[in-house]
Length: 84
Image 1 (cartoon, rainbow, N blue to C red):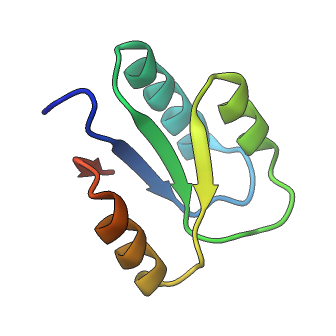
Image 2: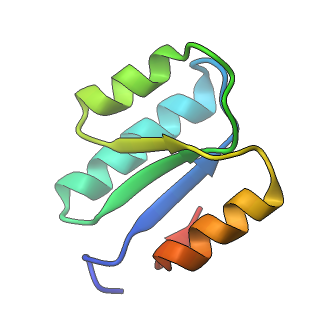
């Protein structure tokens, strides 16, 4: 896999818990290793302090529309190397 091909971590998150901590650490390590990494949240859940934690680590995050079609359209447009 080419390090310039994006790696995505897809999660439905409304707060900070175990999986969010795991994904933040994994994404940060991948970013520091030179990979293009992004966290995609399945849908908007309102204020989420985890987004600031990701930003503080230099990990980009975006929020999708909360449907399978929003995932499909986003993947088709960006063509990530891996969706986790």
